[in-house]
Length: 273
Image 1: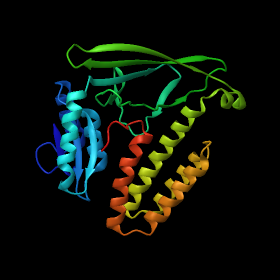
Image 2: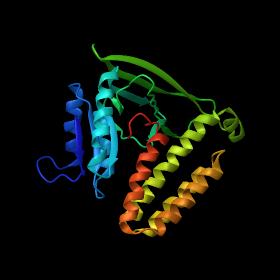
Image 3: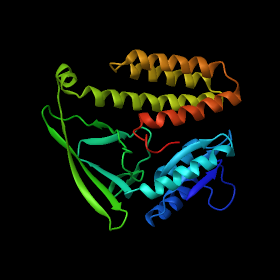
């Protein structure tokens, strides 16, 4: 199912949570839902959430001329999908909790913290970056995040794979920095900073320049924690210049472009047009 909308419901179910539930029920019945925003005023966050819960793609159509190409890609995706209804369920042990999952929505339930991922096709990877925080724990204490990956092959029943993830508490900052995987650390910093940049774009659209500036300062500080700090800082300053001097309509256009670009930072490179 391909939903083309401005994301501004006016009849029937109008609450975002209710719309997401409708899409979820469809996806549970093996119906993949792609959500395409259209028009300058469309609700990008809602349309992204619908696509995420529906296991499909997300994109923005400036006008209807691109629809034929998108529908062609959708037919190809439907033919090549091998795994559907992909869910990652996280259950942090006592002392740990999920602070954020950049660029993704989390459903909190008695079953655990559930992330709905896109249908999987050959050559189209997806990543999930999870930011954790901890209570005060003892040094060298070993904590864990129980993760279960649930999925449904194209022709078959739902399967599940258990993924035990361990977290070691270290009280030596230098030792922690030396032990981390720099590529993963950089990806996490990039994703977290990108969340702040999208929030800043939304503030610019509202005309709240002070809030936008504060969020960009925060993003700049986060990017400074990465080995590629110079590139992150340059991106923040370019955004400050582009959005600060833009008209209202231009800011909306810049926001839409930023949304598409940041899907990659969130590990959702297989989900966007």
